[in-house]
Image (cartoon, rainbow, N blue to C red; front, side):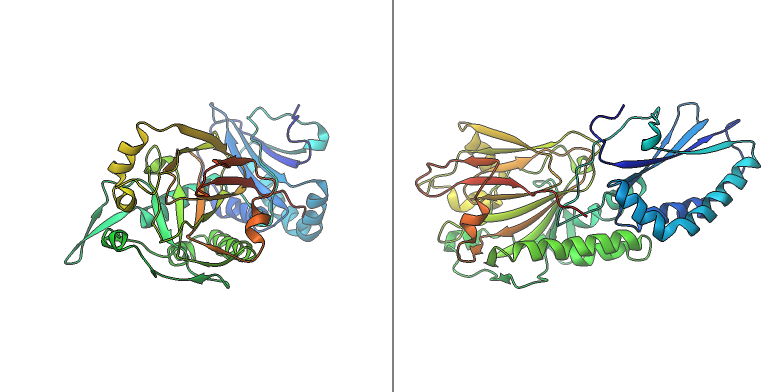
Length: 388
């Protein structure tokens, strides 16, 4: 029995084929069935499984709870029943059997279960495998870090591993640009590191997968709306994406300096749940008297040399959404990549609204370097679940 999934309401659409099918499938019918589920906020996700002998297929629809299912059914019953009737007719002509079961029937699937965290104020959806793969093939390559070498020539950046977009302003958080830069830091600013905006990049799926475009667009706005509750301004903002198709991990790095120590405010969102939790690795803060301090931002090799004699700290970042607040200019850090997609919305060198730094740092799961005399701390807080 499912012990971790009892709050979910699950519908199992199961097909038993008489033989391995050789007739042409009505994929438009299947696509319409998928769309009927995915367009609803009551649905957590849809999973499709197939047995090794290819004689059994299961389309598993996971609702947030039974009330969510009742709401969905009241809105979609007629269209759903029409699609199911067409589906059953197609299968009967092949001699196959279609059955529909639910978790209240105490039905136990022969396929494995996945734990999905509840939704929160930022996100209430999980991409199905088809859409996840589309994201990996079509959006990740746009953000792969490249180096502009001049004369219109662009090459893959050999020193950086990851995927990076610029984060456009959609709310009240002011982007300050590049004021008051340390002269040595400014000379080492990576002018060759070009990137598209995240808002622009996600437009590639506007027509192919309008559902994914709308979900990412809304998530982008939700992130900014959440951040503006705490922040007045930032110097720079970006969106980083993590997935093991990009490599084993994000390049170990620090962030750009300002004349005073300012925090980086990062909101992490986990899109998929097909692998183990990722881990953040970070090291003891760099002191001001370090002669290489102005150069770490653009020279990852210097960061690698620095950490050789420093203690490594780690913790898992498996939550659906979380906030990482730390002195990223002084704390070298990286994260490993898995077969899950993570989005990291980064606001660099931020200024908090009055009292909101204290509000954000309350009840954190992690508080590293609390005794650091320069205030170079690291805080990690998981966002709470929200009800539908």
